[in-house]
Image 1: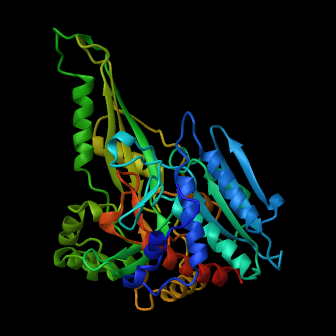
Image 2: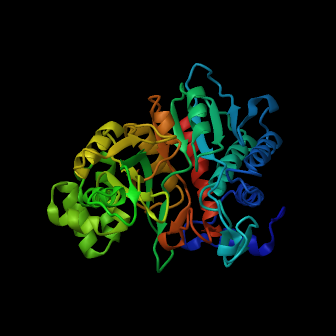
Length: 463
C-alpha cells in the first residue's frame, strides 16, 4: 500500500497514449489510485472480521477532507457490514438528486490460490493488483475523487449529488435495498458497478464502450424429491437420487425462448464488428430475428453470449442421501436462473416444473436478495451525457447500450421506478478481466482517462 505516488507509477498513469490523450487531472487520478490501494488492503469480505465498515470510514474521511460537510456523510452499521450515503447539496433543492452508486464489499479470495496476496495491493507491470481492483474499489475511488476534484475546481451542481456505497452487494444485497428505499426520490442513478470500455487484445487501443440499462433477474429454485428409503441391499425401482437426476437432465435439455430488447439488440448490432465472422453473423441475424435457429445455435454454444439471448437456468448444487448403506430418503438441487427482463420468477419456476415432468418433485423459490425489474429507458439526456463523456477522451470510439447478464444494486432502484445506468469509465482487455476470479487486476493507464470522462459525465447530469 502506498501513500504517495512514485515516478514509475506516474509514468504508468500517463502512458495511456494508446488509450487516449494524456489525462488532464493527474492529481485526481493519483488520489483515486492511492485511495483504491488503501481500500484493497481492507478485507471487506462477508463473515468474521469483515472490514467493510473500515472501508466506509476510509471513504468518509476522504470525502470530508475533500470538502463534504461531516453532517452530510453518514455511515450506518448493518449486521457485520455497513453502508455509506453522502450528499453534496445543489443550488436547487426542488430538483431530484443524481445518485452515484457503488459497493465496498468484495468476493472472498484465498492468498494461497493467487500469485500474490489479494489484500496486499501492488502495482506490477502497469497493473493495479488485488481483490477489488476491478470489482469495484477502484471505481468507487474514481467516483469519490471526481467529486472532490469538481469541488476543488469550484463546480456547484444544480441538483443534489448523492454518492452511496452498499456493504453486501456480493452476498445478500440487503444494504442496497435499504439505500434504494431511502433514495427512492432520485432522478436517476449512475451505477459505477456496470459496463466498461473494451481494449483490443493485440494493440491495446480502445475498441468500444458499452453502458448498461437493464440486467437479468437473479433467482434460485430448490428442487426436492423424497422417498421412504430403505436398506441399500434391497434396491427399489424408485430412488430419490435417480429421480432427481432424471429431472435435472430434462431441465438441462429445456430451452427458454430466445429474445431481445432494445438494449440487447443495440449490443448485438454494434459489437458484432469486433467478433469472429461466425459470431458476428449470428449476432446480426439474432438481432434481426430472435427466432433464427442457426444464430441461436451459434450464440448458445459460446459462454460469452448464451446469457445474452434469453433466460438461462443451470444446476449449481446438489445434495442427497443420509447414509452410505441406506436408500436415499431425500435429494435436493439448486437451480440458479438469470431471467430475461419482463418475466417473473413465478413464471420461470412454473416453466421449470413443466420441464422436469415429475409430479412428485417439489419446487420452491429460494431466492434471497433479488427483485424483478424492467429495463431503464434510453433517456436522450443520459445517452448524450455518456456519449459526451467518453468522446471527450476517446473521440472516435463507438459508444452503445447493452444489457447485463448479472445482477447489481441497480435492480433496487429500478424496483422503485428510478432509472439506473451501469457505467464504469475503465477500459480493459477482456483477457485482463478477472472479476470474482484469481489475480484480479486493472491497467493503471486506464485510471487517468477514466477520471477525465467522469469529470464530464457528472456535470452533464447534475448541472
